Length: 424
Image (tube, rainbow, N blue to C red; front, side, top):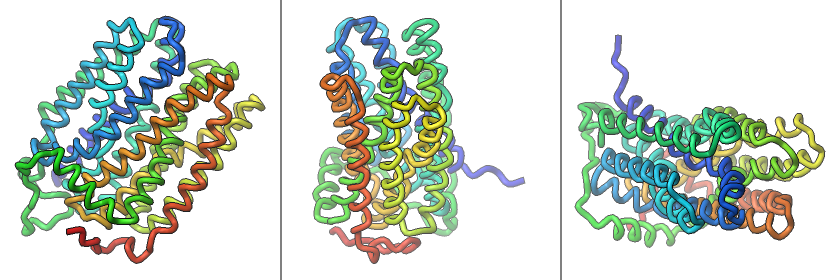
């Protein structure tokens, strides 16, 4: 019987690490109303804290990727998980809104950054030669799996007991994951005594730690990337991707449902239902990205997402659970399906070695969009006492993103080739 290749064990560890970080991030939607009720904080202020978190963990992406090159993957995962755990524990002691901003905006934002930005890219690039698209799809889908597993549970705990018990559950999961990383994570295939999955053993692994300043590495990669038109198109489309997913749906969907009289547990269950279909859609997207033109995949993903966002206000106004379930399925299949083709395109353009940091910058644009929607959604609600305009605008922006990705030159993006743009 053949042994399981250690690359798959690394993928499993990364998968569950991202799940935990995804749980922390997605739980923000569950805590908005409880924080508002207990502390009397304005919803726009609470939204600001979560917006800062979204922006900071996205902005940290390229620096996290550079730090991995300097100190190694395992140490970075330990430091990041420990930082996130500290922030979760400090939540028990907050009393003022500025403390929410510091704890959830800065500490948890930076702690979750590695797991939710470049980890999937790094693991797929360095631990896999074959099945890279599938590996990215599985790891990307794990963000939604966190919602699938625990959002309804967290909502029930909040409703029946207290938000503090929900925070306690998240802290326990983070601690368990920290222990697993300490004992089983490896920096490179060479450290595990193997080769990347699908690589011939005669080929020597070239991955080494660099003795460079990670900040300079990150900005040098950005300096090179901005010379390429496709970088701006990917960054622009990913800005809209973040705006229309974690920023708007991830932060405000539950509150939007509550404003129409839908119970918090039902709203959280709908969000987790999206997670089931996102797990399917994103994994399938990774498989498709190995086989088809990634531009057209992204074109359809953004177009269909925009259509579903325009459907949501109508479904809520009608009070139709059937329409909401249809929305959850339709939107869920497409939630993070954009990530595998985006990573694939950036790898084809910038190469395996550079694409990790460059994708970190592209993902920073994603989180800038998420931060705009997280804060903007709260602001729109404050002005109009409704989120409807936020969802209409997001749907229109998705149509714009479809145009961004389709104008990229096809010859640059031949699927299955090793062609890269020389950026030196």
